[in-house]
Image (tube, rainbow, N blue to C red; front, side, top):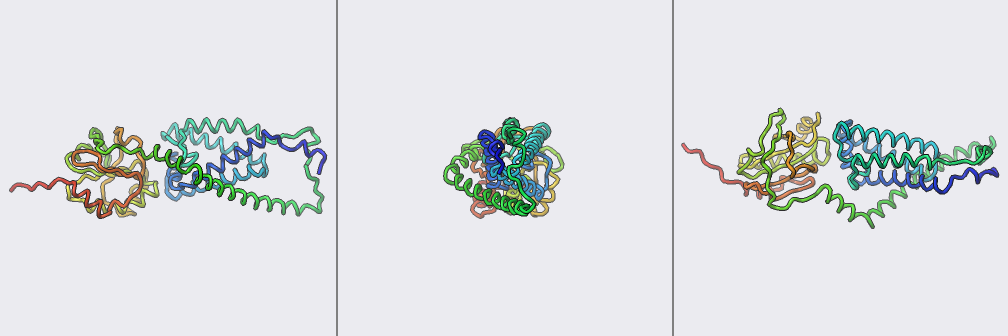
Amino acid sequence: MSTNAAETRPGVFSVTIRMVLGLLFVASAVLKGLDFSAFAEQVSYYGIVREDMHLQVVAAATIAVEILLGGALLIGWHTRFMLAVSAVILVAFTGLIVYAWAFNDLKECGCFGSFLAMTPAMSVGKNVVLLLLLPFAWPRTGSATAASPIYQLSPATQPSRVKGFVVGCVLGVLLTLALEVMAFLAYGAFFHDRIIANLEKKMMTPSPPGTPMPWEWQVRDQAGKPVDIASFQGKPLFVTFFSPTCPKCEAQLPSLERFYAAITGDNIGFVAIATRESERLETVLKRQGCTFPVYSFGEKKPALFENVQVPSGFLFSKDGLLLYEQFESARWDDPAFVAFVKGLAPPQTQAQP
C-alpha cells in the first residue's frame, strides 16, 4: 500500500453525503415497489408512456436503476462514476417533471410512490438541493503524489482485480437485498400505520353520508356530446371512476359490466367516467366485454369529484344523497349489493293506453 493512502481517503462529510444519497435512492425504490401498480399509474401522469405494458416496464426499470445506483453509492463502488450518473439522472428527472408540470398538468411526481406525496415544485426543489450536494460528495485527493493508485498491482496480480470486481458486485447485490429487507422491517414496525394513515388522508377522504350530489355539471360521451348529470335526477345514481391505464381499474371492469347488466331497465342511473384520455380506452373496453356507456369530464368538475381516486365508486339515492362510496376496486356485481341498489329504485310508471 502506498504511504499516501491516507491522503486519498474521502472525508467524513463527503462519505456522509454519499451515504445519504444512496439511502435516498434505495428508499425511493422500495416505496415505489411496495405499491407497484400505483407507481405504474403515476408514470402515466407524465403523458409520455401510455400503454399498460410500457408503463410497467418503465416503472420496473426505474426501481431497478434506483436500487443499483443507491447500492453502488452505499458501498462506494466506482464512486465518481456513480455520482456522475446520479447527476445525469437527477437532471433528466427534473427536466421531465418540469415538462409534465408545464404541459400535462402534473399534480404529483411519484418520486416516493403512493406513500409520500410530493408536488412538482417540491420535487424540483429536492432535486436542486441534491444536485448542489453532489460536488461535496466527490472524493477528494491530497497532493499530486496522492493521485497515484492506492494499490500498486504487478502483472502477476492482475487476475485478482477481476476477482475483486466480481466479489464487489456480489457483495453489492447482497447489501442491497439486506437494505431492502431492513427497509421492509422498519416499514412494518415503525411506519406502516403512519404511512397508511397519510395515504388514506390524501386519497381516501370520505364524504359524510347524505352529502348531496351537485347536479350542475356535465360529462361528455364518447362522441364528445355533452350530457347533463341533472338528467339522472329522481332515480338512484351509481357513479364510478376509472382510468384505461390503471391495472386495478381494468381488473374490475367485468364486474362493472355484470352490475350494469343486472340493473338495466330498473330506473337506475349508471355513469362510468374515464378520468384519463387514452387511445387504449376502446381497446380495454372491448377486451373486457364492456357495453355500458363511458363518459369523460366536461369543462367543469364538481368539488365532490375534484380529486377523485381510481378506481372508485359512489352510490346516490333517488333524492341525490350519498349512500355509499368505495375507494378501491370492488365486486360490484355482488348479489347483495345488486339487490340493495335495485331496492332503491322508484317503481316504474305504467304507460296509460
